[in-house]
Image 1 (tube, one colour):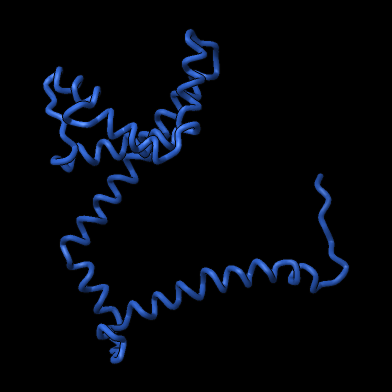
Image 2 (spheres, rainbow, N blue to C red; image 1 turned 120 degrees about the vertical axis):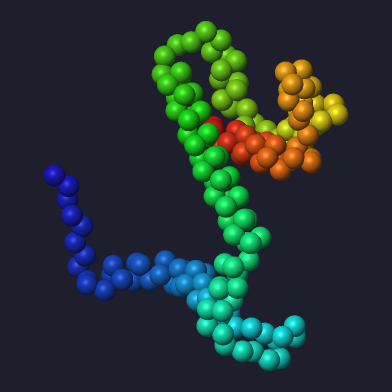
Length: 170
């Protein structure tokens, strides 16, 4: 049975919550409400004339094919990184549950994403998958896959998903 904390003064819990509520209001609620208000306006380039248009901006935005496509790409990326990252993480956790051969190499691979800075990881992925000199691009060409993520959107998405999942695994 847990002991419940009882404050002697009724105002003390509110006083303790006040700083967090103030921070939330100032840094989250107020900017979000300002953004929502400004999204319902049309201004000229210099901000001299402002016209209130309600939801016309959103209507125009959701009828823009490029915007809808970018939302779909973002959803695919998010779902793919989540699914791949969770699947590999669960597999690694199951493997770590019992002793395996090559435990030293396994531990090294687990800690590697932490040890490598994001900028260095980006350069590493660039060299591995470079269509001209990359070792993985060379191996993929050997099995009949013409890898060039610089001109193929699908291959670029695959590479970014793999790299993002790799950074999230550890």
